[in-house]
Image (cartoon, rainbow, N blue to C red):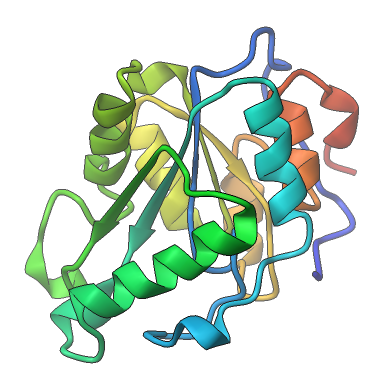
Amino acid sequence: MNAPAGAHAQGPAVVRPPAAVLFDRDDTLIVDVPYNGDPDRVRLMPGAREAVRLLRAHRIPIGVVSNQSGIGRGLITEEDVLEVNARVAALLGGPPDTWVHCPHTPDDGCGCRKPAPGLVLEAAWRLGVAPERCVVIGDIGTDMGAARAAGARGVLVPTTRTLPAEVAAAPDVCRDLLGAVRHVLGHPSTVRRPL
């Protein structure tokens, strides 16, 4: 993973663990294959299994919130998404506590597609936790925008497609997924201030 050298945190350190952690799917938990409907092409991002295992060990509910516009574009089906999700769950050692995805295209103007708050709010509701007690971990600005819009906390884990402006605007930035989970569990040494 290519993360910027100046990974940073802005704002206060985490004082208490979140009530739930919501992950973006593509390029956060798994390597992004655009509009993938083939479970055999699923590959975990580095540290994904360990990050999920750590949250489970702390008994923190886990959700996945994912834009899947390929459904609305007619490139994949709802069944394809469910099959890919089942493969992700198998690789992670079990399913998350909830999956929520948006099937709409950017032009549909829905309230669920990130950066709108709908996916985060729905996942929090399904998990029985307040959105402001959730942390959203993702790789791009729309993930952070959805967290912000829902009143949740965002943690960015940059990849090669993350824009510098998205890194600069993120409330917290961690170099890798396991580091992000350690950070939200109260280990602020995994995050650095800007240089």
